[in-house]
Image 1: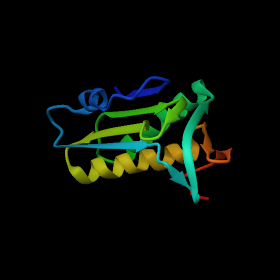
Image 2: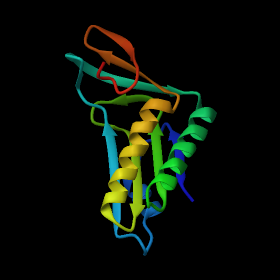
Image 3: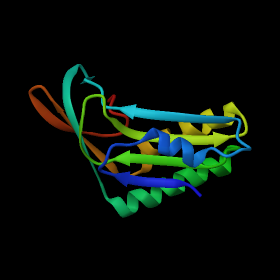
Length: 140
């Protein structure tokens, strides 16, 4: 069973690791996406995330299931923060367990890439001098 959650509280990576790893797994990949202090040549002060929660949760579940169908991976945990986040806070975490490292890495990357493209979570970036909604991976 996968752990899929949208939450306002801080993400506890240890919880995700404990959830995914089983005795048959030789690898666990953990990705933590954190709030950085710059983007698009601007000094970022904070981020705010919002979502259509029911749809976002369903889509995130679908993405995780796709990863399990595509790669030889076991359990998955994917958690995204909502609300106001400060610099260095964890905004998103994905943990993937697998018998071997390549599948764990590939599954983790696939989930993050698809999450950014398809899950209806919106990011509002506040920076020195203003704020703006950021789409996709935020590098455009």
